Length: 127
Figure 1 (cartoon, one colour):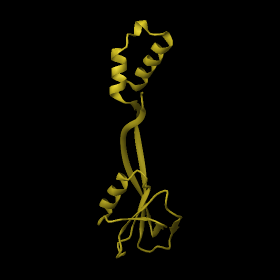
Figure 2: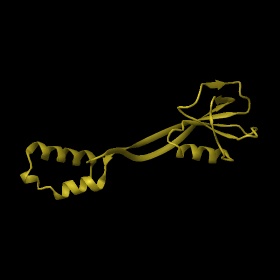
Figure 3: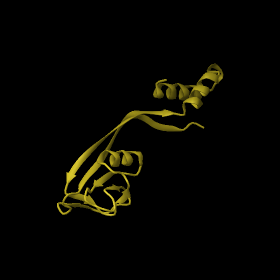
Figure 4: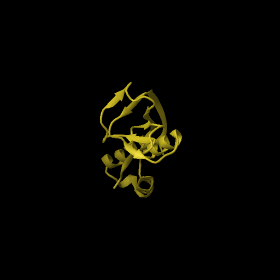
């Protein structure tokens, strides 16, 4: 079985919105904006964070598919950061399976259609 997956480099960036928060955030125990953002990046479902430096319960709140609406210009002192996951890369496959398939097949005895598929896949993955 060959499983294709997108691999590459993700360079996250943040868009800042002052005096804004997203309702129904998920509390995280991060103690700085950088730690809060790093924790969000590590959570595949996280789409942003609210940083509330004056909240005694917690300063870092994740937003994601569980969140409510974004409230602007009401949440004085809270900064919302939208996470932009700018991922580049190409589709690749389970490298061991592909290399094994390409390396062990006797392509001269394969049906033409199969040979073309393997050639096309090899070219597409650019090994």
